[in-house]
Image (cartoon, rainbow, N blue to C red):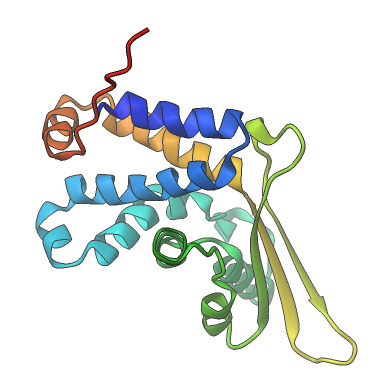
Length: 196
């Protein structure tokens, strides 16, 4: 399969507002990249290499460097803890991938709750009107008066997420001749036999 066709399929799905197919194909990209980046490790565990790839190429760039702020020690700890609780890591991206591709679900709330010491977490992808350009996600923390547990609502824009992964794929891998040769020989053979 020519990778341009793969990328075009994702972009076309976004353009036509077919968001779930766009997300499903996007969640495959870290698998392809991880297999290329860490071939020996990938043979042992594709989940570990997927997580490693995502953390190295996406997650670490999502984090805010608080070292140059005027926060005191307590505020700094709270900011880092908040960021850790609300940023999609490789582990949770892997869970999204498995949930969608194997079970048809994007529900990782239970998994995320375990990460956050049983706080109530509501994770969701969002799309908005005219979302083919994407927007930033949002996080909201609230405490219900009848329940002392915090409720964390995390919204991540689906289009922005897809475009972020696509940008990495296009700018790092699709310009690498070694990647193209190695992966296109191993990938699904797809031939368009339609005649106009």
